Length: 257
Image 1: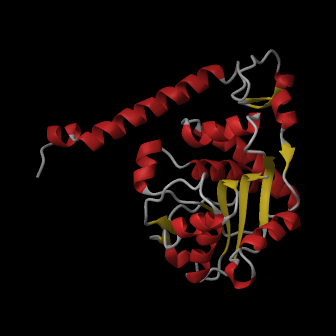
Image 2: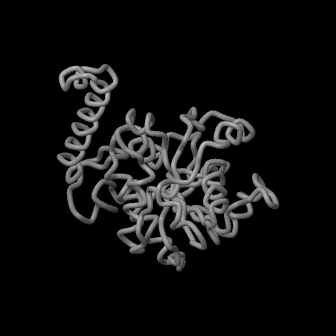
């Protein structure tokens, strides 16, 4: 058995500690500048009227485009997963995201996903929660953030979907359940994959977690940052259905266009 010093000096543990320190420094920087600066355009806040929320100016927020209606989103979803392949009943997104343009929203998504700005994820989750509350999409037993593999979580230091779900919870008062579904395989990023590659990449990547007994006959809302083809969301939804869920809906901060 390794002694305490050896454990602390293990390369993987040192790397995890460095990542954790970098994340903490990034968040500390954000905590310092957030009252002064928009995370999308870096414009200095000069009055409370200029803020859409704690981290975003109203000017940038006003450029964000509303996502299509839930009916339109569902129609698009089932084009990718027709018939029995679709495990999702309802689809919700807050914004439309044009990934080919260097937009303010793209900057925000990148920061909350890759740069350690998990409190921005919570703020954006709050915006999503406000939409869900307005639409009456609140009758769920739990919010289920899309899980990431433990190795990925060590790399990033956090799961952005969990923090988005925390923001949603602040509005709709539905608990976040992180142990219903777990990720069993470390998968490559979906960003540059085709639809077929995305489905293959994510197949059999999820299974039930330690709280699987809570799934039976439940109604759940799966939370993630971005909806593209929906392969990850559909796979998580199918996993929940396989373990006894009655219905699964999905909600994201943005839908790519």
